Length: 473
Length: 95
Image (cartoon, rainbow over all chains, first blue to last red; front, side, top):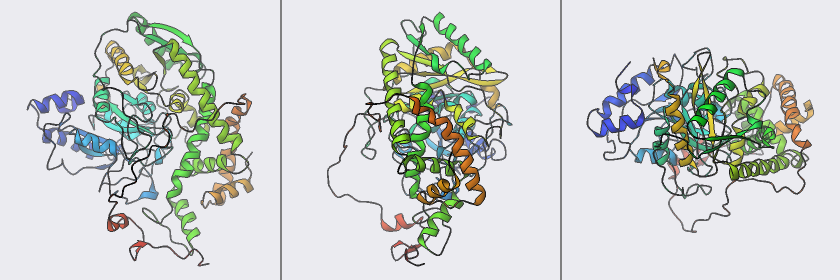
């Protein structure tokens, strides 16, 4: 295949700007592919009919289409966070991250499939059905932003937006062989993102390469009066340059690179550490003593916040309603019919952790563990510029393989949740193939170190020269 | 171990109707997950302050000035039962 689909986002921006490619032709090339995908990967929940009539000219990303995870509210466009309980909901406003990228010139290509309310690591918990992995259609794309990851990997979109609460950008990016970035908590406004766990949720880009990730991120960051937890990004996001890692101190946390990492993923990880050393980085083992407890803390904090956030879905103001004789019956029956199994499980877990008599033992302790996890990272970053780990302990697993075993599913997030709890930025880049399936490499740095992170990821990306074109065939 | 009575109590708090099958399943699955999570009880955490939020922002307030909000018809457009310019529900005391 050739033509516009083979261009990265940055290349497409240049072609459109130079007048070598029309925005309409580019949009239609992707729109027709996205619209034809319904019976294949099931990556989209909604595809635009056409490009907007009045595209923003002279904007930095003018005329390049963007796929957006379903949970970003988009005015007049279906936005239901993968849930039946928001059936038919078309929000009256647009999320800040989406609005900023529209101002930068991107055009809305479609909304992407996801695990319901972003709860899942396989994209099997969606009211729209599972998403398939473009590298092997019998396997999961990862989750919760599985639709965005599959769409970018398969060339159904040049780039996409996702959200990451405990790994929901990085893990699907790894499993689909693309780049996924979770920025520093607060760097991008959460306004208009249908909430899962508010102290952890963060928007970020899915792209084919690191340069595209930097380019999208540049136009997403910034303080927003509508999100009181957003912060001004110190400085500008730079496009990564540089050809080596001289002087970069990389730490390899023992706790996230040991047991549980499957052999193929480990082999790829170790090979890339050797490559990084050749490129001039210094590499040393380090400790994150509380990281083994991060998953437990996460699976208390995130469900606890979710149980509160999802209380708003009660059949009164929007979405599904199941009628009953009294108000309480409407609440309980609407929620019973509208939420899927995993969402119910997390609401129950979170409600339990917050309930009288258990609060201190569960939620309170989890918040203390969170403090220790963040302290571990702070200590590590006194000695290291960045830490490096595998993104996920395995390559993409088979559809249905873990769906009946919540604990096994949760263990997919073991390498990604510590950074989420600490609120620090992390990126996953393709790290080759194992048995024909993509492996991910994760780099993380201190809060607001995105430029450093992107620069190092770019150097490794150039040296690894991963070829993802097979997934776009 | 989360028993049936606890599952029903928590479901009531969560305003969630569960089928008999879901009650049994929830009891088993939550017990499994909590069994794993219990490991954090082994940690020595006395005196460690809790973290509810990672960023150092306290009370981000905007000026207390009136500004336009969503028009009423727009806010009601997605409602299952718009009623007399509000959200219709059965009387809470109906039964």
